[in-house]
Image (cartoon, rainbow, N blue to C red; front, top):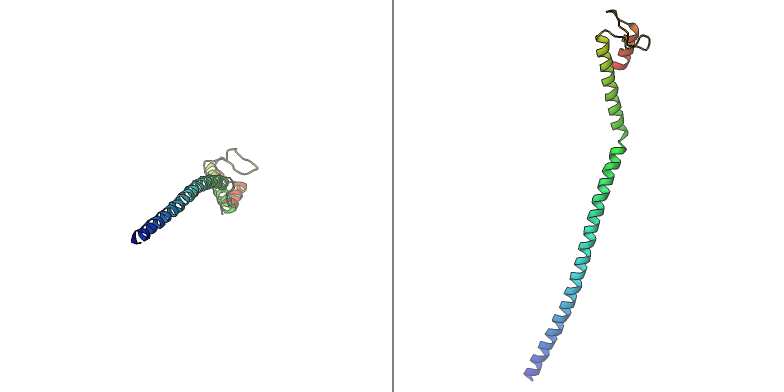
Length: 116
């Protein structure tokens, strides 16, 4: 009787091992599937980030555009002031002609209006 009980226990243990092996195989399959999905999502995420960076570069914020335009205008006015100091007109009336050492009210008005 003890042998039968022992054999029953061994057979029951074998069934439990088989069940655990089946569950383990299913878990390995699930982990492989999740790993593949994770890899696919990481690649897609990287691709989307690259596209977002490209779009961000194309569509700058209005603040950045205004700051850049202001900086460009300021640089242009500085260049015109340098040209004026070199002795040339920068006003729309006599632009590019020599000032012959005299100040021009049109040029000064233009520069003061854009330099402030």
